[in-house]
Length: 257
Image 1 (cartoon, rainbow, N blue to C red):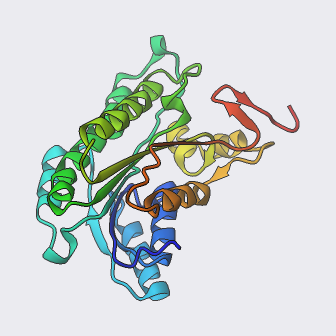
Image 2 (image 1 turned 45 degrees about the vertical axis):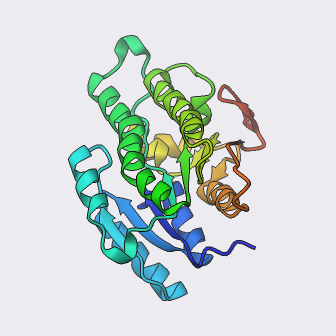
């Protein structure tokens, strides 16, 4: 039974995509949520909607995970009822462009590294000590198939997700013998705003997902729910989730191609 009624869950990147889907599903199963993202108006609308549906209040936290001082300040000064975080879902992340390395845009590299690696580290570093002190906790890192393979023009994005894979394994080793679980979830092609952000082109993003059935954000949220509701002695360390028509980062079957 997926009962989260006594859990407080913090989700980064909760304003859209996988983060928003995780928020909806966890709220449905009774969790109290700390919703983090830069787009505050989206978070407020989501919190209001979930309150109306399930009757619980949720905490909206404007947060840029790339800003180390902001992360320390905001996560270090949460109101008392929200300090005891049971589950951290490190979902904030992005890709920018699909250029070969020799044509790469350094500013894009910095943003991907700052968000996908450093942002995850900042938030995790802020919350794990409290989990250890309370004797309970779970960190879920949303990675990517790009963290296990490489593909043409994926260079820096793939490197950042390889880092998430390595950090997830390292966290497991660092937490060995301690009551904090760590899970890495590595999706293949998921239809969210991810590709719109990557290319800054809604039409191009829409066209990419034509001719095959991609994963939905709700599919990944369902996997997260499964992982965080296992008994305490069970840690789903790593989960790779692909559309049925995708066999690797480079092998995707399209109906008309």
